[in-house]
Image 1 (spheres, one colour):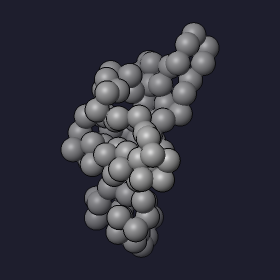
Image 2: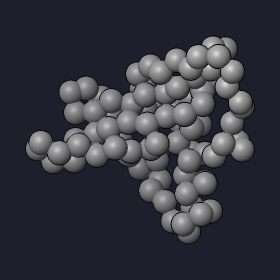
Image 3: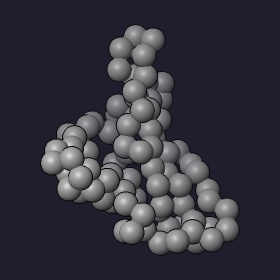
Image 4: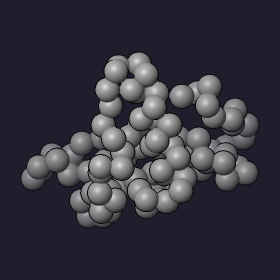
Length: 89
């Protein structure tokens, strides 16, 4: 996905974000396209409910450039009691 994103200069900012924000959707859809091209299949990010990444059952993070351009994302969500799953990195 690096060929789709701008080059970051300076310090990145990593902050929590709602999974259904435009920045999160853009990053997860780009990831989906890349995974589908590489592996022939990928989980559809739209099929994941945004509440899966809301505390206390999950968190979604977005890294941005100093200018606020989204660069990367990732999150975790509860998979089972006592078990978390890292997603959308």
